[in-house]
Length: 122
Image 1 (cartoon, rainbow, N blue to C red):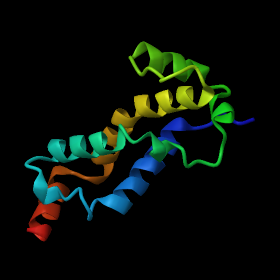
Image 2 (image 1 turned 135 degrees about the vertical axis):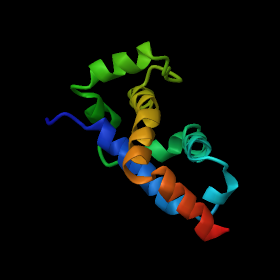
Image 3 (image 1 turned 90 degrees about the vertical axis):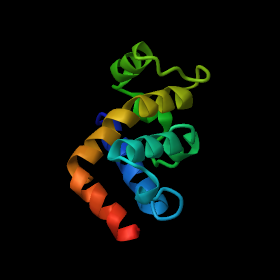
């Protein structure tokens, strides 16, 4: 089986979340800086583990050949709620959430984009 790409899966989850929610309760004009906006998105996604339940591949299959990433997540403090494969899978996804969100902002939402988004909505 091909190694599951957690980084791409987390990126897809974030982009889907942004597409579904930015206009509703995460509006750029409510935040002073791009970093504040990014933090708000992180905190909106992070506690909602249900966002990571909607994937087609089982947690066990995702974890195959990714135990090194799980070990890395544990070392960084991403602690699963229990010893199930589903919780191990979520620990990896939460571990990758901040760096992938940073990557999305670096690639897609520049400071100029953020200022333009704010101005457009004010």
